Length: 453
Image (cartoon, rainbow, N blue to C red):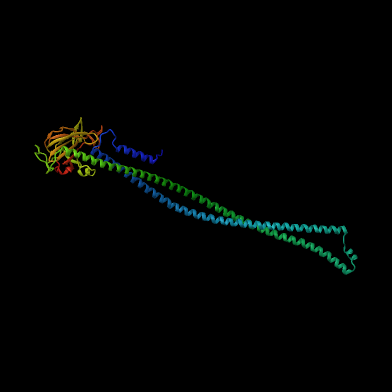
């Protein structure tokens, strides 16, 4: 079943539009959710670009096929031109033979007309002789004696005898001449017939040659038609591939436009969240003041400890990867075998989250589409930290916490990637950690110790 590419493109854009836009009645998206949507679209853009590259490679292969076909068609067309030229040449020779045959037939017809004319004269002469003989018979036979007796003298007798002989001789000569002419004309007709037969034979030979060449031409034309059909099929595939590329470009343009809108929305949300911290948190020089707490954890030069102290702590997403998407934050993970609900997992889930510095909890909340369970601690002097995607929160708003105190457990609530499933309920477990100075996000890596633990 063929699918209209324009309809397919429209449906794809429609689906992308519906999945990209928040529905009315649902909570507004958080920065993290927007980041997730942008990341999803970036992946879709990569897939579209990959599909486009494949189609362009496919088109390049198809164009190579057409190039090969065109080279073979050039040869075939040259052979067809030669065959057509030979057929034209033979048609000219056949036409010349037919013209000569027609001319000979005209000459034969003229000769036959002359024979008829001569036969007519012979018949006329024959009738004249019959009339003369009949007249002589009716008048009685004229003998030599009668000519002698009726002659006035001997000279007259000789004259009359000679006259009779001359008349008879003249009539005989006429008949003889006519017969000679008929004989000559018959020989001419015979020669013309022979010439015509020879021309007919030549015409048949030329016709046979033409028929053989015409068969070759038809075979070559059949081969050419086959290649033309192949070229048409390949060109149809190229058009289809170009239509797909056009749909990919349209979808990519749509995704990029949606990402641009989301970047603007994310910036607005970040400003709103930053505004909350500015309005509800402390302000100052941005340095940590007060006691570091009773612990043995590594403290950075700026007075913070790593919120995770369990196992081999790593940056699963550093500041650079987050900032490329417009989020000033880091993700922390500590892989360790843990038994959760009777099953052993290599995961950060349920690991302790420690307060990076002493302070006051100013916000605890849950965002199903964003941070999940999260809290914000104000450390005074304009410094605050945020801990997101927690499995559980162990403190509430207004609580005073000390550096190193366990304030939550690592989890995968909210918008985590990959998302947890029934088969893998610990998927995506990590700590999303942010640092703000006077409400503005900064690079957490600059405030954490190195090594982390």
